[in-house]
Length: 113
Length: 110
Image 1 (cartoon, rainbow over the protein chains, first blue to last red):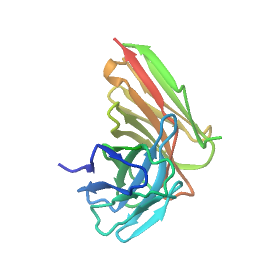
Image 2: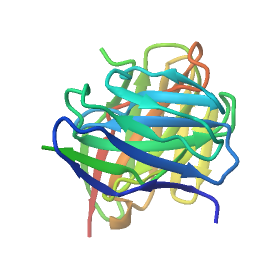
Image 3: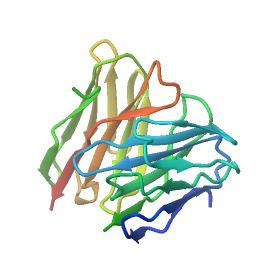
Image 4: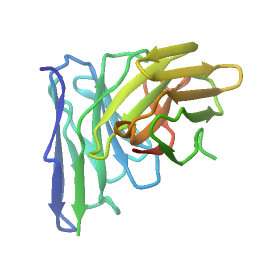
């Protein structure tokens, strides 16, 4: 079945450690996105990629890094520079261009203590 | 002020009631999305619309571009409709980037 997978569903880390969240899609979508969701707030865009080997910062990119070496994969690294990393992280993908729906993964809940 | 405002923030209904969730936006858009987020966190797209009205089962979405307003209606609501409903807009100037409302938490009691 086609879809987006994120792993793991729950992730726990100690403060000061970098952590990488996985996002894989087999929908043959060109565009991929990372969002952060906090209680009482709308989703906020961290990074997005319209095509392999290219990505752009979203609204809250500080303390995060990404890579897009393969079309299917868009991993997100939460670095120790991110001041409040505990959140729910959602990955999405869509065909390239503005007129398409985005398909969301199940999310990863990251807790940093 | 957020570019996308949803109301109400929380809504409790009895099974069978007709439900309306509203979304207002303040800038020009190319399209508007309605999304559903279940308690586990996963999000599914319900509708994408740029004009008029769309219907899928018991769900109806409308948009008035001139008034910068959209509504999501649920007819004959059911406890399984309990979820967070999120409005997101594609700004005319943002390419494929979505801007999201804060969501409406809907609880339908049996």
